[in-house]
Amino acid sequence: MRLVERSYTQRGDFMTDYNKLTKKEVKKEKDTRPRYFVNYPKMLNFREEPGGNIIMHLKSKEKMVFLGTEDEYDGVKWLKMEARGKQGWVMARYVEMV
Image (cartoon, rainbow, N blue to C red; front, side):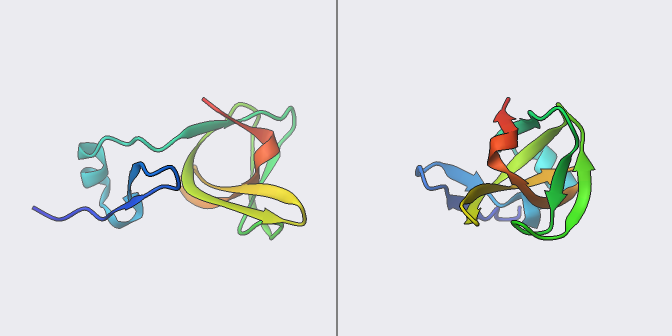
């Protein structure tokens, strides 16, 4: 049995570090990461870092997973997400929790 690394969120909840688990192990763990969707009528830029290069575009209503990190860049709140198997950043004002 392998130990699973866990950490606390800012609210004090347990959060599993899913990046350190295999896909099979993730299926065994209950994935409690918050789900969000794109709430923007056009394509949303999915970036390498807040305000950085665009990795891909996300469609309206496309779902993603919040990875527990927030940042502020140029007065704008950014959230680190996982979408289509990639990690990146989106502007918080264009996503909504499921």
